[in-house]
Image (cartoon, rainbow, N blue to C red; front, side):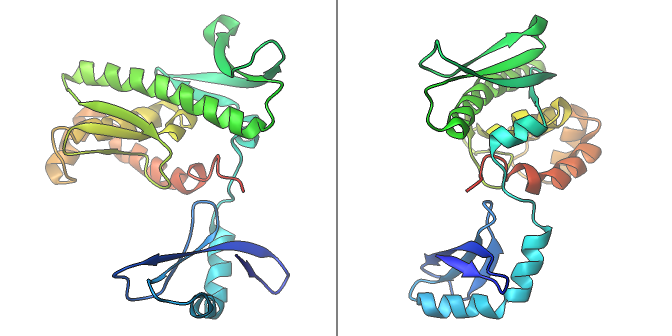
Length: 241
């Protein structure tokens, strides 16, 4: 289902029905689709009529929302990935002698090469899967490093594809991180990791939490502002339709 504007531009529209929802609500999704949250028994016609009345708001929001980007295009424009507190130059190679995608380091360890089988039918999907695999390896090592340095223990770590969050920490001391952390500068990647590790001690955002995080990262305020300014753009990487 698509929403058509006066210039014939079409934007996907997603209708989400939830029991208990009483009002119609519009938002822009992480794939730059229009998201309509509506009561469970609301008809498509009523939902679309509501969206039609909000055309001006939709246009305004789409104009200021970063575009969804393919990971391949992003890495061609920003050929770098963070791991182990360092920044590596990234290149993508299509190789004929491999059946499975993998990665290796060259140039004395300063360049990360993503090797994709030439037989891959979908290069974007192959690169996305490989970078997520790399992110899992890299972030597990980095979290373990900081946890040991700070004398902290967590139960498990998962690396996922969250739509808007960089990370979270559960009451069971499990940490979940967004794979896109490897696209950030090392300092910002560490800040998110330290933020979640601080939740192992303070499961809240009280003044005690922020004071603790200040001891983990003296540049906490600057890094927090920087993360906020980048989130909308970075969360749309790897989501091109």
